[in-house]
Image 1 (spheres, rainbow, N blue to C red):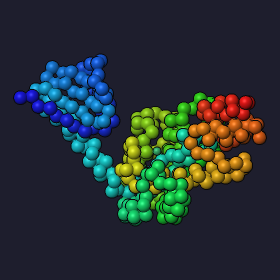
Image 2: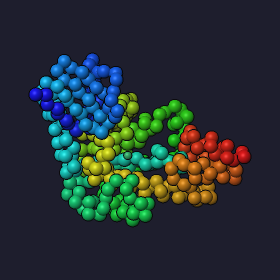
Image 3: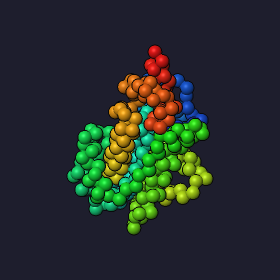
Image 4: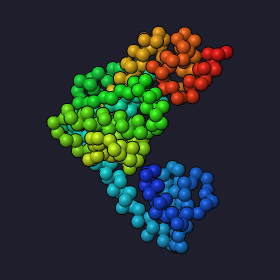
Length: 299
Ligand code: MG
C-alpha cells in the first residue's frame, strides 16, 4: 500500500529541503507548488502554503528524514517564547516621508506576562492611537535603545549604493549593541524580526566593528515568537510617528505615511512651495514617489 505523508514546514525548512533534493528537482510544477522532487521511491511536492507532500513506497522513510528537524525547529521557537530576550524591529523603510527607526527592547522572562497584559502585540495590528498610549508605558518599563537614520543620512547612504537591506542590518546591529551596553545581564536570546536570512544578515555586517553574533536569531514574524519584538516594534512605530510629526512641522504640512497617492500629492506640494531640494531633508528620495511628484508639480 502506498501511503502519503504530509508535513507542515516553514519557508526556511522548505528552502533547505529544496537544496537537499537539488539533483532530483523536476521542472513542471503543479499549481501552488514551490518544488517537486522525484526520487526512485518517492515524490516530494512542497507547496507555498507550507505543506510538503511525500508520496510513494519510501514516503514514510523520506518524511521521517525531515520530521526530526521540523520538531526541533518548532521546539526552538517554542523555547524562545519564554526566555529573557532582546527583540529588534524597524519602522519607516516603506514610508516615503520620515526616517528609518530601529528599536531593540529587552524583556526579561519575569516581564513577559506583564507585557501581554498591557496588550503588547505586533504594532501592525495596533492603531496609531493605541501605539501612542502604549509606547510611553513600555519606554518606562523596559530597557530599550533606538537608532534613527534621518532622511539626509539615509539619502547619502542610498546614493553611495548601499542596499536597503544593508542599511537595516547596520541599524539593527547598532541598536542591539547600544542596548547590550546598558544591560547588567546577558539576554538568553536576541531576536530580530527577519528581513533577510541570518547568514545574509551577517554577510552585510562583514568588516563592521562590534558585530553582535551570540544568540542572534532572525525569525520571520518574530513578534509572534517573543513579546520583546512586539514591544520593540511599538516603540519604533511611536518614535517614527513623533519624527514624522516633527518633520511635518518644519516643512509646514502634515506628512502622510506610506508611499501611496497621498504621498505623491504632498511631495508635489512641497516641490511647488519649497523646491525639490526639500525632499532630501524629509523623504527617501530614491522612491518612485519623487518622480510622480515631479510630474504632478509640473502640470
Ligand atoms: Mg519588522
